[in-house]
Structures are given as structure tokens and as C-alpha cells.
Image (cartoon, rainbow, N blue to C red; front, top):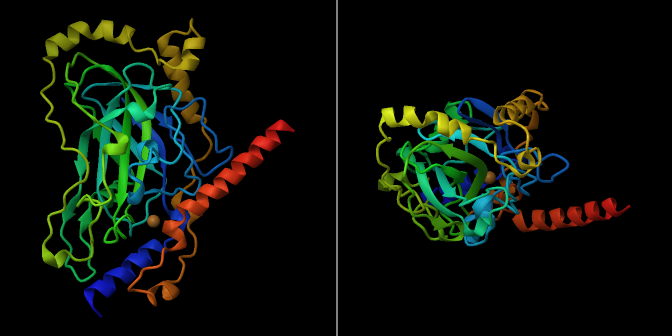
Amino acid sequence: MSSYRKSTILAALAGAASVSAHGHVTKITADGVTYDGFDPTSAPYAPQPDSIAWSNGATDNGFVLSADVSNPDIICHLDATNGALIAPVAAGGDVSLTWNQWPESHKGPVIDYLADCGGDCSTVDKTTLKWFKIKELGQLELGAGAGQVGKWADDLLIENGLTWTTTIPASIKPGNYVLRHELIALHDGGNEGKTQMYPQCVNLKITGSGTESPEGVIGTELYTPTDPGLFHNIYNDETNPTYQIPGPAMPTFGTAPNDDEETETAPVVSEDVPVATSSAADVTSAPTSTAASTLATSVTTAEPVPTGPVVSEPTETATPTSTKASTPAPTKGCAGNKKRRSRRNARKSRQAKNRLH
Ligand SMILES: [Cu+2]
């Protein structure tokens, strides 16, 4: 079998993984406090009033195709709306994001971006946000080729129990930011426009005494479908490719402001750490610490997180797809965005009607 044919079949197999095998971020930990993510797969499919996570309409844990990277859906996922709350994190601190599940067949880079909201992240227009990278990881090991794939950043995610940790640059200017955490799946990346993008956004109130404010790029201009890092066949590593992570170059971050200074300004900073959200603003008298611990508590009382095995579904057989190896048929699992969108819209209008009644 030619390696092209083989790789196409492999791509089809990977694509045949059940839709629900894709994932979303269920948990975010910032400065040691854990918050709930947004679950797009469960009712009421509506923005969460009490979450730092941006909501989205990926009701089947789906993706944005690399064909659509100039659509605003690429910014924070399908039909994303702003997270209402914001999590404090000190510059230099860690933010961890935990996915509910991720299919092993879906190989690709993991990229973390920040964008300064320039004010309130709960109301900022996402199309104006300018993103700069704070972490990126692509291919870690070449594969043998002829269909044998290498090791990728998301293999590391799986090894780490589906948790990805990124460090907020110590030198960053304090303020309200959106963190855009993105998995990219390249199993069909040899076909232009077929790479799958899974962005997830959360609001972070970064504290500290840094001054750096890297220039960013608006979300709809981060990528093009023909970027070498998006239009890339992961099954042909025998050609010794050098994988290029897509998106703008990583800024170089300076060192942390010196420790003495940080210690001196610490009290000022902590006064300045209200969990600044529209709802917190309504409760004007609530002291900062209360707001923060309320948030933390809401996580402990959260509904049970669905676990991977529970949602596992029979993998569709690849037989029908593999007969069309030369023109890979879009599989139900990985190419149903349009259909999903119309289903979603239909459901939305049903929900709107129900509300009227
Ligand atoms: Cu997929």
C-alpha cells in the first residue's frame, strides 16, 4: 500500500473516533484555586453566570476547522461568549487546565495565548482581543514514517492525566487578561482546511509589578489554512520534517521584577485583587476574599465531572471510509460542523420558544 493511501486511511480511522471522544476543559486551577470549566455538552447549553471560563456552542465537544480560521469562532471556540468571572493569578504563577478527555489519535501542538482585555474581560469584544503566545509545544519526537506517527504535545497532555500547565510570565504587566488555551489535531492535517482547532478561554486577573505588554494579533488573523503548522501530514515523518508551530512568534519575556520590590508592593497588590466581575460588582460590599472563596467553594460542590470511559462510544468502522481512500470522505466524527450548527440553531430557536411559553 502506498504511504499516501495508508496515511489517508489512518486519517480516516482517526476521524472515525466518536464525536464525544473530543473534549473540553473541565477544571482550571490558578494560584492553587480550582474553578469549574464550561461544559458545552450539557443542558442548559447557556453561558454560565458564575464561571471564569468562556462558554461556547461546541455541544458535541467539536472543533473549528482550519478552513474557518478567519471566522471569530476561532477566538474562543464556536459561538463563544465571555466568562463572567475572573480568577486572580500572580505573574510568575501557574495556571493548569484539565480536559475531560482527549482521543489518542488526535496529535498536534498545544498553544497558550494571553490577550489584555484593557478593562473588563466579561464584556470585552472578543474580536478586538490581541493575542500573544506564552507557551507553545509542537512535535516532540519524529515518527518512523509510513503511517507511524511521532510524539506530540497532546501526548504529553494525556501522559499528565489530561492536565496542561502554563506559567504566567513573571514580567507581564498586571491587568485583566483572557487565556486562550488551544489543542490542535492534525490527524487530517494533510488535507488543507481539515485540521481541527479546539480553543478554550478563561479570564485571569494577573497581579504583580511587571511592565511587559507584548504586541498581539487579533484572533481571526492568528492563522491561515495553509500555515505549515496547520496543513501538515503527520504520517510521513520519513521525510524528516521540521514541524513549525502555527501562529505568531513567541515573544521573549524579560525576567521577573526583583523580589524586594515585589515584596514591598505585595500589600497594595492584594488590596487590588477583587474578583472583578459584573456579579461581584453588584455585591459591592463583599470583601475580596469572600468573593474568591465563594468561587472556590462553588467548585467543591460542583456536579460530578464526567469521566472519559463513561462517554466512550463504539468506534465507527473504517470500512466504508477506507474504500474512498483517494478522496477521503468527511467522517461523521470530525466534519459535521455545518450540520451541528444548524441542529444547534434549531435547538436554540426551540429553547427561545419554550422560554416564551
Ligand atoms: Cu476528531
